[in-house]
Length: 273
Ligand code: SAM
Image (cartoon, rainbow, N blue to C red; front, top):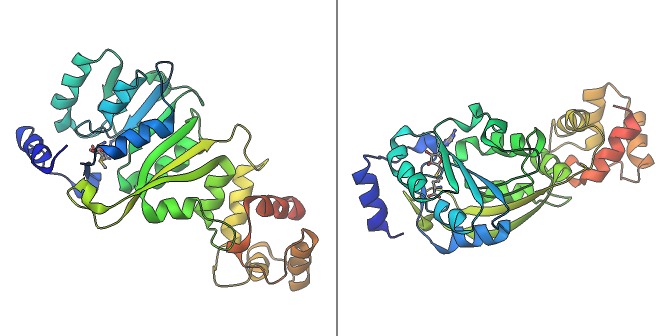
């Protein structure tokens, strides 16, 4: 879609792109095509799109033959989207905030659908958390997010964060491509990236809530060595906190960002938390 075409659509439908709704519409046609390819969609797939906007990604999702369920919060976009519904039997749209959506009632069942979307950045963390952890989970996600978020999700030991541990415990993550600000209207202030997450059938932990409680304690102060944070958060002695790290094969000087998901899980088991 050209800059002039998107301006005309905004004008015709009375849309003034709203920052708080993350309304940065895609212009670059190559990106949605890459997203559909990365999602591996076909006529047997079901796909959820959050925030179809003016349908830049939607039209490629529809072309794949998949059953496409869209959730769009902005009522003013419905006249445009309802035209697409009339033209395509495999497309439906629900005018609701995704945080209020009744997914099962929309035919979305646990690990039986893909989530493919150019996400509104204000709700990205909520969406990643929700669709990876809570039923009905997406089987995979191919989502446009801020580049910085994508890089944190796929980080390796040495650069890990609470977000990378959570995302990697529940999925296998990779960056599909990066997307510059000029690929959108209006132009956002940040670079973007397409992130692919394949949900693990069995998470890398036996107790996700307990693992995340421990990880938050471990990251309470990023600059401190991990044993200091464990002492403070779990009321351990210096000796106890250093020993438990050595028992699972880690250095007593390790910092929280140095641990992989499997290290955190080993630590959780060793601490019996
Ligand atoms: N898919 C379109 C594209 O790629 O050009 C638009 C993407 S734009 C980044 C985000 C879209 O999400 C907008 O259409 C916006 O109205 C919608 N949106 C924002 N917050 C939402 C929410 N909480 N629930 C559902 N849709 C939302």
